[in-house]
Length: 395
Image (cartoon, one colour):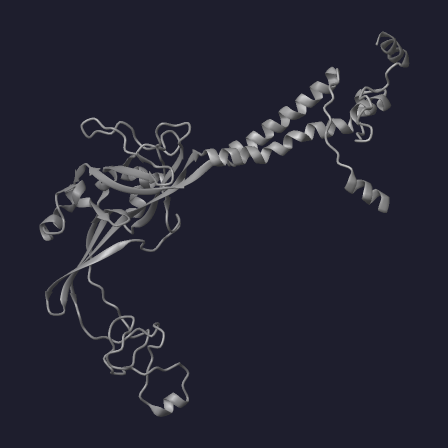
């Protein structure tokens, strides 16, 4: 054991180049080398793209709306009754409102006139709404009584501090009749998204807006056939968002997310165009009111007209990245793949016996032990002694 360790520490082994005239051996080597190079290129260069630098995107979007529509004749009375709220003709600027993270499309207006502020018993269905002033009843209570404190906030308003009896049998809720109409014509409005993206690490800036001719769209969005077109109709946004029609959600409203996806390869493409996708934020099966805003108009103290506006809110988000090859990452990737080039030679060394019949002679050619003491010894092995005698006579 000690001799083996000492021999290992004293002996240095270096590869020796040996050319073998064997076609099958060379074809086997080239086949393995080609497979390794192709697999490494597909995995590292194509799949992982390790030679390219990732550049996060910083996007910004604005929009422009086009179109308008007339209200149907059935809503003529609403225009006469509420001339400051309902209009005969709605333009895109009246329907589409700008927000910090996108835009909103007005789809339904509900008006509840002459709401009067009064006092009434709280519903017993409201938690902690049952109270009593009888101390004995508090001791033998069947309910969780609460203290009715004046000024404290309740579900229906501010408490008066008076404890009154109420039950489901005697409770009656009166609600004023409401007027309103769905703005069906809003589905035909056209939206143009003007997007721009900046890739600071790559030093590139691109714009996603398509050129137009006199404000007319040169394409219309489709999630499969034309996902990069920035022209949309409101109906298309609803349809491609997963809903059957605009009318189904116009009355209650909905919130959508428009995703602008940038996937840019600056090594091969001179331009970078994003792709758009639409999805509802709360899912397709949202039944309660998703989005609305209230605008009360007070006629006098304690009397108002409540206007509730339902709409479709669209939130615009940017995601994706840009990629660009750098010399450092390219050299790093190639250096990681360089050791794999020695695998074919190692495999063929293990398969010598498949290609050579005389393995002893091959090993004598392949492996040679050099010593400084035998520096004058000729390196040619297995030389015919008669050839050495002839050479000596000539000299």
